Length: 322
Ligand code: HEC
Ligand code: HEC
Image 1 (tube, protein in one colour):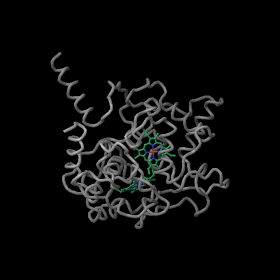
Image 2: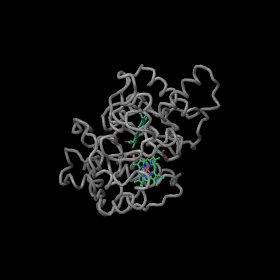
Image 3: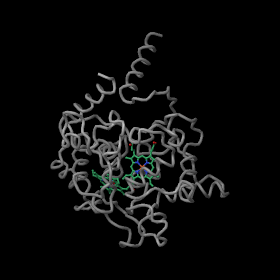
Image 4: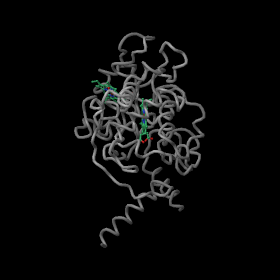
């Protein structure tokens, strides 16, 4: 009884530190991927499969090179699966199993409640460097059906172990783009190219996307994307790159993951206007957001590359009202 009490106090304390809004007692569930191909070929099954196809081949449906100008919603030729591996079915590959069961949800970046459509459009405007899709349009309806099916059997509010990305230990020093370049040359350039521009399936203009996606430059995610932040990118990279590693078999250590994330994000990429408006409740602002306003006493460099531990400590003091 006593042990349990201490544990839940500790959990509550952590919840309070990390989130300023009330934390509800979350249920948890194991990772289990529903079988999209087992769905019958009726209207719902077709819609779910269409949603999966849009997630896998976003560039061919709503990319900047599709024939119908009215359907050009994304700004780059990536797909959702470029970062949500295997259409979100890869455990800790930024996965989608259980995602639908957790929306609508409070989001600090907007300081507001976001629906699943809002959240998809968040990635449209940042990771895909594009514009929001209409919430009642056929592409969004198909995607939402896919997200719903990916939460089959997951009770509302349940956290599935394996959704999103694993945590990473924060390194003590700043992430170093110079060392990151060495990591990049050794482990990444063979696919993503020495200049980070990836390899297209065909030629520019054909709306067929990439074999290996670009990691920076005009056809990449914009600077307002989650991947543009060093801690987020390090988490993705450590547990998923070079392609073939899983969260159970990482090759890079934490320092290499931070350094190569810093190297990738030190390059130019599309710019999202008005980033200062993110996190309108400043207490929510994530520590690796490199755009202003900055936390008192910390520079733009430290927000970009770290060391992050002092900023994390300052944020926790702020959230605890000290
Ligand atoms: C460049 C990488 C990238 C691309 C491309 C991308 N995303 Fe994301 N997405 C992320 C990252 C990183 C997160 C986690 C962000 C966070 O936690 O703040 C995320 C989070 C999400 C979430 C929230 C997941 C959850 O469990 O709460 C949804 C939904 C989502 N993305 C949908 C999409 C869709 C749909 C597309 C394609 C239209 C897409 N994303 C393209 C990187 C990407
Ligand atoms: C064997 C080829 C290969 C190697 C090596 C490789 N990647 Fe990737 N990478 C991919 C592919 C393919 C994707 C798209 C997702 C998928 O299909 O799995 C990807 C996606 C990514 C993404 C997310 C998408 C984007 O456009 O930002 C990042 C970031 C990334 N890789 C970074 C790295 C880093 C850093 C390394 C080296 C540590 C690396 N990759 C090594 C093939 C590779």
